[in-house]
Amino acid sequence: MTELNESTDPIDMKLLDRWQRDFPLVPRPYLKIGKLLDLSESEVLDRFGVLVENKSISRIGAVFKPNTIGASTLAALSVPDAHLEAVAEVVNDEPGVNHNYEREHLFNLWFVVTGADRAAITATLERIKEMSGCPLIEAPLDTAFHLDLGFGLEGRRRKPAAKAAAEQATEFTLEPEDRQLISRLENGLPFSGRPYLDIGAEIGLSEARIIGRIAYLVECGVISRFGVIVRHRTLGYRSNAMAVWDVNDDLVPTIGTVLAQHPAVTLCYSRLRDMPHWPYNLFCMVHARERSEALAVISELNKSHGLSTVPSAVLFSRRCFKQRGAKYSADQRAA
Image (cartoon, rainbow, N blue to C red):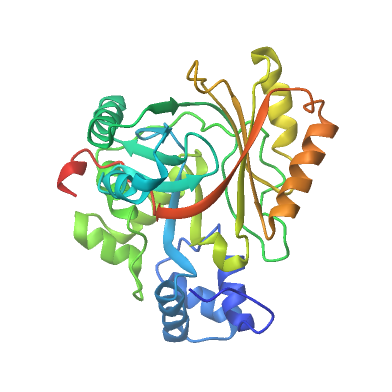
């Protein structure tokens, strides 16, 4: 992986920064991007291909809002250090696991599980607990205050100013073909001249229908972001801190809404406690370039919002064992 710096090609920087959201929903999206950057369609395709190869981006595609089209949860295991890598492999082998990190805590292996429904989530967690033999906690999502996770290259995240603090999907209706489309989008757009046409050919829909359904899912908030999915370490954000607090439940909506507006907070949500081992219900993710920078942001949050005396913890990530897009397909064991 090549980390971005001052010598990074400015065109690549634009491709990474400008299209993290609002990727063109037109028949020839790479051609449209090329015209804006004075590049040919083939040059844009080649550049995106290289950015994938060097792990600057994971894919171009959809970020789905949790618990709208399927189910998801955050969980953690308490693993002896000597067995951590072996247990991480067990977790990674589950198709429903899309993120898996080692963090600084007694519960040191944190992972996200997605699935078609709650039953799929429960089955995955039961398998992981049985195969690992380790204590497991679960922190299901309660309220999302900010779940976009787009990164700007000027040190501030990208977030539309018009978005409400509590980011919830509006009412929506899934058409029968949407499940196929969602499943196909999990792997990202193909790098071809007419990617929506190619997806439509795979699942038996017209190009116009594919574009229209994606636009609809974006509009109603099922897709929270459609565009380039960068790997944050490539942008230099190597200090990934999960700050958690045990806040009075009545105060969570007010505090969470305010915390979500801080430019250094990349994720903010409330989750259910898992007593007695996990008493925390308010979470913020801070992605910073240095550990000291992340700690300074968390200190600021504590002082500014009366959280200094609230029970809390800061869990820095140590290693990333798995990171990819969420999988909501029903038959994940066959994936």
